[in-house]
Image (cartoon, rainbow, N blue to C red; front, side):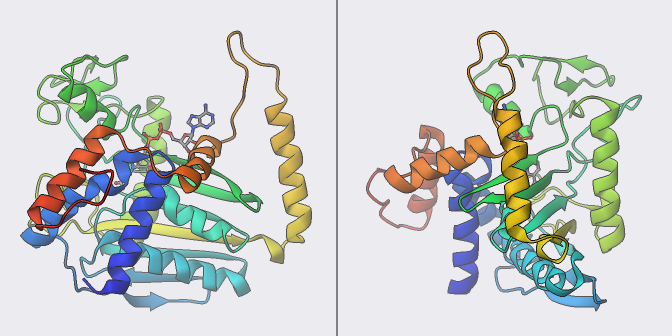
Length: 330
Ligand SMILES: NC(=O)c1ccc[n+]([C@@H]2O[C@H](COP(=O)([O-])OP(=O)(O)OC[C@H]3O[C@@H](n4cnc5c(N)ncnc54)[C@H](O)[C@@H]3O)[C@@H](O)[C@H]2O)c1
């Protein structure tokens, strides 16, 4: 991978770690290396614009690293929205792009509202079905608020993200709720042999399913990527090109109202939410993204407080490449 592309990937993963979203930061490196070696991800490939209008574009990722193609696609969405106010950029033939929020937040750095969506190979059940039918397609939006604190929501559309179930499985624990559908399509809190034989449940039932469906349309169908089972799992099938689809949207606020007026209105919105009466036992209400921004500020001051499982994963990658782990990782 070129040094510039490697830097793009590193920036995405480390930024995600600073938010405390360790499931989608540098812990992914070991899986990416497996897929790069097996041929599912092409380290040298570069994304290419294959269709374009003033407000939109479609890129072919040519199986490049998801973060390389996705960062370019979001940059293009931002560039287009400067003049067109709104833009949509689809990306096909892509791979796992990490945390959707990373790309949405890129738009806020240019005083725009950003959104990033992806399809995922089917790993989630839908109401009435048995087995995995659709992916737990993630979605993120980010809104500029003031200089160092965008508001952003960055979520999977399953009741609980797969990485969290993986952690409980490794600890041999049951789930705190019925977050899986068993082999008969019925809700269960037992991890059992998951991901074989059971599927993620959609968040809020038909509502999460409906949102995952819209994301499938805006990413795989509209961008020309693998729809549902035509997209492949980068974890379960490392040699295969995933042919995932993503899309990136930007809204140029400054073309609609002066950015300072918008930020002032965002401050008023935030204040009213922060000042909401607190539930029993609660002393604080957070905005979406606020916890991540506070963790990031702390990480920038004092370093990232990695959990032991992430350190162990990074040590494994270092051993693999015969690199001496940096201080703090040994
Ligand atoms: N690339 C992929 O294929 C893929 C697939 C699924 C998920 N993901 C990523 O997994 C990550 C985790 O997803 P998740 O579904 O576990 O997220 P989650 O359930 O941990 O929710 C995180 C979001 O909810 C907000 N939030 C949490 N508690 C809050 C509170 N009390 N008040 C206000 N806001 C609050 C956070 O600020 C954040 O935006 C995301 O980064 C997502 O993009 C990626």
